[in-house]
Image (cartoon, rainbow, N blue to C red; front, side):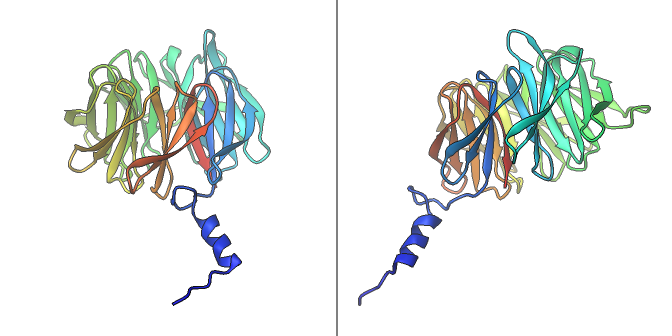
Length: 326
């Protein structure tokens, strides 16, 4: 039997798959290069950088607005303490506003919820909230803890958690109003907590302790640690898959990406990811993930079905925080 393949069919086959047989992904990956002071936009299908946007000094973390139009970048700084947020118009590929934070030094962990942008000021032991429409910080609360680095918001947006590296704690803050701040609690953790994420159902917060290589699991209902287990050397970032079934951990000490079964609390696989793996981003559909390997200037593409790295994207010097837009 002879099979006739037309040019149109052949073209479709080529366009629907990449060179390694994986289904093509459409969208744009946003990557911060800490050492270049830039945010790059990479095409997910071609794995090529298509735009470079200058930011403030030492951009570490970022978040994207719900409509996918704006990126908010925390300019942490390098030798000089950072004190600003860069607001970037993604379609126009340019910074449209530099938000001066004054004494709120070393902004780092940052997350959007609705039309509000929450961020940590590491050196002032505070969490602030920036209102883009009003162009002002409209909410500010102290944590009383040293080394607040990363933060995460519960899905309902009513509570946030900060990982405090120096105080070895996680701070739980019920978000109130500027005139009536909500309840705050300090939760003692392992050594130097940093990586942090909340489960999609909002019931658990997982914390990576970089000082002792453990994961602490916080029960959101009671704000107590209900389980701890050893995972590696330096679990610097922790990310849930959208369905909540797995957790990805970048181990900066071992140079590995670790995949964990969230329900069983056991390691499914460890994959070599040398050259300082840090930031992790998982696509909304849960099929692909990206891992920033800061020491090599690349972001590696990870297939969630095969649990293998499939490609690399050369982004610049010191890639770390990432975002995603369609």
